[in-house]
Length: 390
Image (cartoon, rainbow, N blue to C red):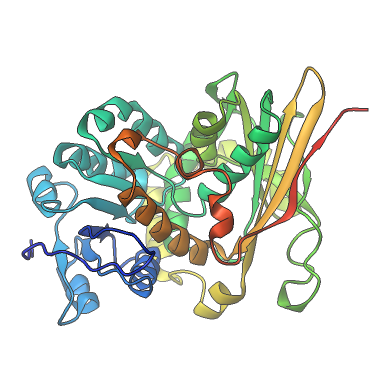
């Protein structure tokens, strides 16, 4: 493990932020590099961390600091966190990497944030809520595309309809996912489709009649390369987003369904394909082969795609007894660009929280429903509007 004497980091932005040494683990991954670039742009000098010392040394340069340590060596992991106030964890699949990092953060009294969207990671974090309170630290998984936009939408809509019993959320993020995201999908497929019903997570068949087939994702983008690619009526398929764990804690709404905009043929074939894929992906040999294939492909969207791309998030709440409902649509930057931007802003906010905020927290539950609107290029395309059933 490479170590260095901890020193105070000068943080000129945002105004009033105090100096805290913190690190990004998985700094040389696709999203990790974006987080590092955004942090430096914001005036931070994070400690770069991960398993591969050669990659870290190359990224850090002559003046940078780095620490190389694995996650499967508890002693080295805890030594790697010495003198650190917070960790922004960016090394997936998080179902494998998050538990040891969270445990080490609890032991060392270090704030923990990550960019996961994996339900088991969120549920594990909430099981450690009391331990985090006792240690005076914050555990906040999901400070990227999943779950900040949808958590914010859920909170806005719940404020408008506080007696809502049902929440639906959907994401439309055109473009190829990163290699890390694809690896996470490979690891999560054996768990099948999850929803939340009456406050409990439930595994269901995506072919059930209760699920939507289309969602109105706001007005179509008027011009340019996004014309015809963003907004409008879109086919969707139910999907296991991290909001099944976070939105339940943020809003208290007991019935939650998440969707992803997807080609019509995928949405229609999912009920038939998912059982087959679940059985197939349970086999280690299949998962190893897919991981190798993913590694040979592009790491993620190009710089031009990240600069020009846009994403939309849709949310709807309903109070079943009265039929009252409310909907809203957010538009924001391309998914990986947004994750880098929002992840660093979330870390800045956590470092400024007082000790009364300790525990396992959700972004909107901690920063407020409309905090997201202060981030660049984020806007409500369709503001929250309440409707009464005729």
